[in-house]
Image 1: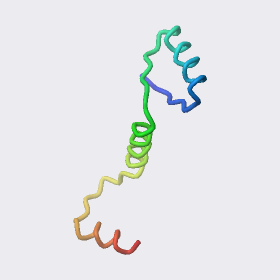
Image 2 (image 1 turned 135 degrees about the horizontal axis):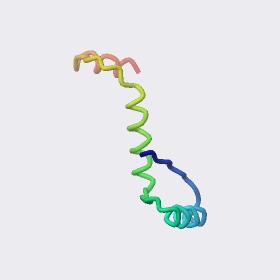
Image 3 (image 1 turned 180 degrees about the vertical axis):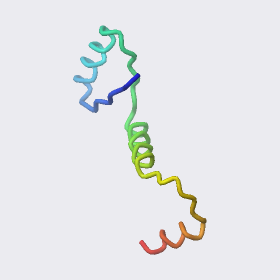
Image 4 (image 1 turned 90 degrees about the vertical axis):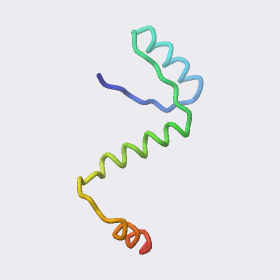
Length: 65
C-alpha cells in the first residue's frame, strides 16, 4: 500500500477527494497541525542513525545553538 498527500485549497481538495472516492481510494482529512506532525515525523525518520546518545550529549548540543 502507498499513499500521497496533496496540500491544496479547499475547492481543489473537495474535487480531489471526490475523485479519489470514485476511484475506490480511502481519503483521510488532515488539519494543518496534523500535517505539520506528519512532516516532523518524516524528518525525524530520515535523520535516524540508530545510535544511542546520553542525555548529557543532547543537552550539550542544544546549549551550543
